Length: 566
Ligand code: ADP
Ligand code: MG
Image (cartoon, rainbow, N blue to C red; front, side, top):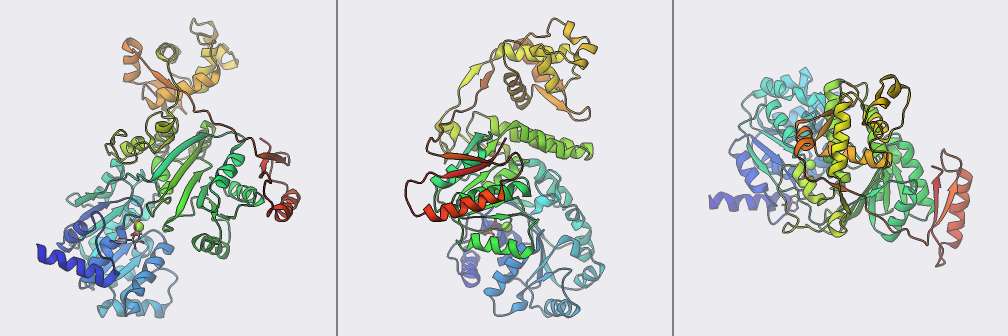
């Protein structure tokens, strides 16, 4: 259909001023205009919004757009109003509207003015709205950030599960378009099943971001110093540093500030005014770095973010991919650096305790993949893409050499005998001990439990005492990743043998154990340790800030790095 094809480009130009479609946009839009159900999987920044905005503007009736965040909806509504003569072209329906506002929205819809109606899923469940929408002409329903439907996604919202019921009440025949940047098969399956659009035409774009460089460094007590150094080496460039806790955000932002870096904190504990102020500072280039919890970033579209640092490892590869995806949106350089310590994984596991078993199992499985990513010696890009179900060959693929493992391969050592020893101990001890106990048994370190179970009288007790406990811990993690063993959640993490492990014990020929990279220390950094444990000493911070102001203009001043005592 060459005619309608050129037509679409004209419409694109007319409404958005863009000359051409990106990637799969045109195909998606054509399907939607043909009244098909559509499922779009496209990385962040790929241009998903336009896939429903343009067909909504082109058609009669109102498209309902479900989105999880008010801020995201407001941004989009403002943008759409900006390209139209009539403010009524797009509306947000939310709980903060007055009676008059709501009447205005209803009038605009009834009069055919409103093309896009943004709603949060919980507002859509309101009787009043459902009753009203039932009587109106609805062009289609768009479910943005559709992964919110799935517990396997990184942002589960239970209200998303009610959408199908509501659609059926409004008009069960309207086309549905689901959009997400999460590509894991489990999440996709959940979305199709929950929205009941198993027949949807699916469009999946590649998740490869060839301009992003991936790196993982071991997390030591020097992590703040290391981050400071990294940012200093990228002076004047824009970046995001993610931390797990609000407290850490505040502390690290302070450390960076003391070191002359223009950094602001961002987390949900700050009041709304400060949050907006800090976000705007970052967007308007009035500061270089934002130190943030994951509360920061959804819908942030700053093209020239040059680095994304994870002070703490996130809870899943999807989250990691989403968060690092905010780097290099303009196609330019984007360095993704994560600090990893297994202790942080254990911390995340602790957060999950007490949740329902099914939820914990999902959480553990996702974390296990994260451990795999952090500890892998293979191409990190290949690891990520493989996780999303995409084939990638680092030898030929775009960006194949853009990670630490490919540029600086990790040393590997044959460990077939050690793996067999480990599996033997796990099996012989009865598959009822956790990793820490297994390590104690293998290095021959007794305790009350071990002696009461008479494990110290077994021939395998101390069979690996020639190696450090950290060695055995690392090997356990690597055979967990290799799926020779698993952690049983219902029995609080006891190690169980899997079929592949039994097979390996019998016939395994080789297991290449990966060791960590080594990192050169930067000798020119002066480190000042402040306070005992706890937060950075406020008086010292103030003093250092003033000192830095005084000497900042001079060259050859070593960067002072303030950090907490370990
Ligand atoms: P996503 O929702 O997939 O993360 P967005 O819809 O927010 O991505 O789009 C990201 C950016 O790309 C936006 O600034 C948008 O204006 C821009 N964009 C989308 N489609 C096009 C296009 N065809 N040409 C130029 N820019 C586009
Ligand atoms: Mg989007």
